[in-house]
Each structure stands twice: as C-alpha cells, then as structure tokens.
Length: 261
Image (tube, rainbow, N blue to C red; front, top):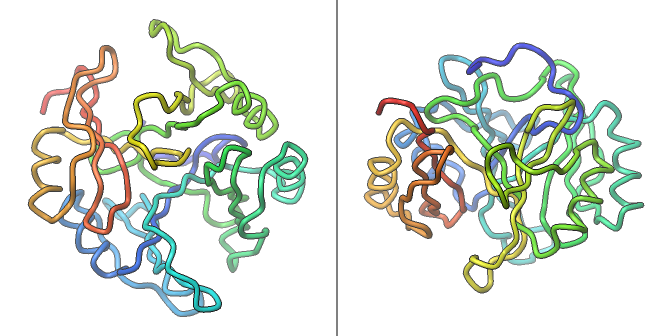
C-alpha cells in the first residue's frame, strides 16, 4: 500500500527527517536521487522543508543549527514514531531511562513533536498528529520502506520500546532477526552492532525503497556520497546497501525481493 491515508497507530514509524549543515544541497541531492520535490520552507517553521513525491509528503529536510556557538551536529536522519498523547509518552521515555533532547512542542496546526534518545543513545522522534499524519507514501521507489534500530543492547531496547507501544518478536521465516510489532503488524527491526564500523553510535537506520539498488548506489557516489556497505542480497528482503550522502548522513537503500527493476 504505497499511499497512506489512515492515521498511523501509536508506536508506528510515521515520519522521517534529515538535519544537515547545507539544506539546499540536501534538497538538490535527494531530488536527483529519488525524484523528490521540495524547497526551503517558511521562516515560521525555521525553513523546514516537506519533500513530496506525486504531491504527497515523504520526508523532511531542515537546516542544522548550533545553539550557543557550539559545533554543528552531524548530518543525520531521524525516525519519528506516532503518539496518541505526546505528554504521557514523554514521561515513559524518561521513566525508562531515555533522554529528552527537544521537549514537546506544537508545530502550528500540524501536530506536536519531540526528540529523545533511548538509554543506549539512539535518537528518535515522537509525533502526535493533528492536521499532518506523517508520510503519505511508503514502500515504493524513493519512499520510506523500513526502520532498523542498530543498538549495543537488544534486551534493553526491547524493554524501552515496549514502553512506547512496540512489541519485540522474531521475524517470521528469518531466524535470528528481531522485529518490532504494533497491533500485530511488523513496523521495524532491531539488530546488534557487532558488524558496525568502529565509532558509529547506536542509531535508527532509515531504509528507502528503490527500483535498483546498484544503480542507486552508483548515483550516490557520482553525487559525492560514499558507500558504507556495498550492495548485497538478503534472503526474503531484497538487494540492499548502506550509504552516506555528500554531507555524511547515513541511510540504506533496498530493492525489495520479487520486484522487477
């Protein structure tokens, strides 16, 4: 179901956005890579860009800021989870040992957001929708396909995200892989960091669907990005790769199994 029209159940990844030092350069890069349309937004919302595909929202891009003269934070993608009551969800984040990075705030008539980190340091967002439910297209070329938690403590992650409405359970037909479920539907996954490069912290890795993983990786490299994990085949998932955009934001691309490029 590429187009999403119903509200996202609490605990489900519902939105992603990118914070970068050069917002316009990121808009240009993802336009060329995925076909997104977007421009720097109004100053009312800090210039935040809502990128679209076929006229429907797929992701946000914003300018990184350095409060009090501190160095700019590294470019990164953030996964947001739907919340029915962001105030009570904030309390659960703190009670379970997480950190509050951006306190709950209202975003016009669109909804309410906050940003936190789990006890291992993986950053995530929460979104309580009002007029804006989140991504309007998923699971097709250039749109969000999957969100994977890369963490140093899987048992601790199971407990923490359970408090946010997600149940950890084995992925059917994939021994050794753990998924997160909401209302019986798998909405994401979790894996340990044993095969991660040194220096990469725990994080939520955003996966985009693509028609052809190899040609997409080639396009990333031509545009000045880098390859962290070259294209490989993962049984029952598809052909995937992990890359960084020219500003070093990490993301994955997946050509789902069974599709024709």
